[in-house]
Length: 226
Image (cartoon, rainbow, N blue to C red; front, side, top):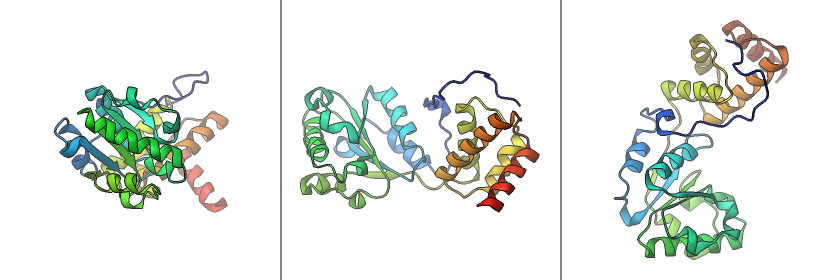
C-alpha cells in the first residue's frame, strides 16, 4: 500500500496501552507495571535492550498513575521538589553514568519521592548493578530497586513491533512483508527499528510501495553491499 500521507510529517510514535502488544517476552513486565500502586518500596526498575518497549510501557504507567516522565540526562536542571510531589518515571538512567550532577539530583529525587509516599519508575539497559553509576549512595539505591525485564522478542512480538514501527511512519505494508521481515532480520528491536527506517527511506526515494518482492530486493542488495 502506498504511503498514506503525501506530505512530510515527523512521525509520532503511538504510546497508548492499546498500542502495546503483549507476548510471553514482555508479559511479566506488563503484569508488574499493572500491580502499581502496590510496588514493593514504591519503586520499580524496568530493564531491557534498546527499543524493547521501556519508553512505551513507562507512558502506559504514566497514563494510569499521572506520573511525569523525565529523561535522566535532563535531571541536572530538574525541580526536584516539584517532581517529587507526584509519581515520576526517569528514563535511561545509564545515560548519566558520567554526569555527577545528574546522579546527585536522582539520589535526592529518589529519597524525596519515597519520603512523600509517591512512586518511582526508573528504566535502563541491563541490571542496575551495570549502569555505571559512580555515586555510591545512588548506585546502592538503584541496585536495591526491584527489577522487571523486557526480554528479546519472540516471533509474535517482533512482528507486532515491526508493524507498529511502520504504522508510526504512516506506512501499512501487506502482512506477507511483516512475516518475511520476521524471518530475515536480526532478532532484536534495534534491528527492527533500523530496517524499518531504511525501508521507509527507500520507499520514499523510489516512490514504490513496500511489496514483498520490493522489500526482498532491498534487503538482498543491502546484504551484498554490506
